[in-house]
Image 1 (cartoon, helix red, strand yellow):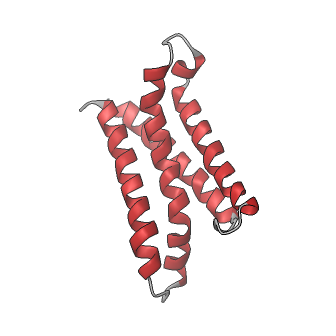
Image 2 (cartoon, rainbow, N blue to C red; image 1 turned 90 degrees about the horizontal axis):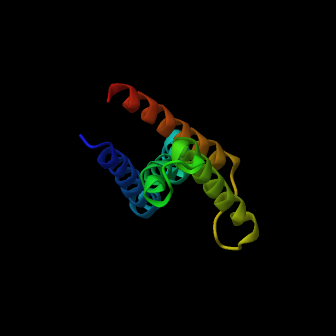
Image 3 (cartoon, rainbow, N blue to C red; image 1 turned 45 degrees about the vertical axis):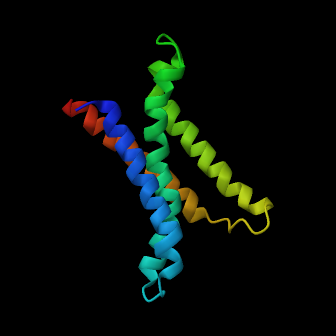
Length: 128
C-alpha cells in the first residue's frame, strides 16, 4: 500500500471525526457522564493533533527540495508546525470574544495527538 495514501487516510478520518464530534455529538450529548464530557471537550484538539501532522508529512515533500532540512526532517517539521499552530489557535481564544474558552487540557491533548501520530508513523515505518 502506498504510504501517502495511509497518511491521507489518517488525515481524512481524524478530520471527519472532528466534524462529527464538533457538529453532532457534542451539541446533542445530554451530559450524563463526566468522562465522556471531558473526552468530547478535548477531542476537537486531539484529532487535529493526529491529522494535521499526517497531512503535512505528505505535503512537505511536494513543496520542498529533496536536499533541504524541511524535506529530510519532515516528520519533526510536520509535528512541530502542527503543534505550534494548534496551540497558537488555543491561545487566540483568550483574546477573541465568543470564540471559545482557553483550556490547558486542550493543549495537553493536542500534544498527545501529535505524539500518537509520531508513534504511528514510527511503527508504520518499521513495517514497510
